[in-house]
Length: 269
Image 1 (cartoon, helix red, strand yellow):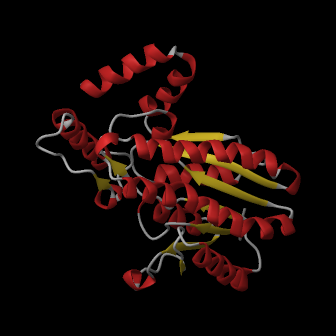
Image 2 (cartoon, rainbow, N blue to C red):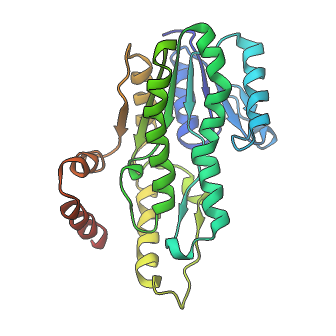
């Protein structure tokens, strides 16, 4: 596994930074991306390349910059993403589109940019970082869940379409981890005259508390390291607390109304 070249989008902070630091310590040639390198002039954990995943030209330029330095790319970790909360009815359309542009279109831009190189190498791995929230329609997080769920589904398509090229696709869905995602998340305002005011205000506080008390992102990094070491990665992986991981299994095996009742009771606690 030594000396494999890894590109991590959104690698300057949070889960992406944790993944990059862990892989770099284990001998990988790691490159992270950030929209503005000037903000990270003191960042010395691994090299950063400027990339805006929402801009295809920026993505192509960043991948070209990497390939000029390394001449190959073994692993892409599509980690860049943003959060969003709010009642669907009251969430501005422009914020919905922005979320999908970053969480869904963004990873696709990067995949399109790296696939030609991986095909030429006849080898490569793409790990799309999704979310356990992407497996279920959570109240007041529906847009985030939908954007991550869409990336889960399209990963299944890409596995089949690229099977003959030696390129592997998989997803890793984290639960709640202690990162700075809450600071950058868009929150639809809690309106005094809103029909959703009481429920949204209560759940919004619970969401932020879950992130603050979440697990160490190093767990995600270790899972990425494990996946890279698999000869034939599975379609989907999860990482998080036992309850969070078990919720995905329950969603698959329980009748829809039963799972919905369990979710409602958990949220009401």
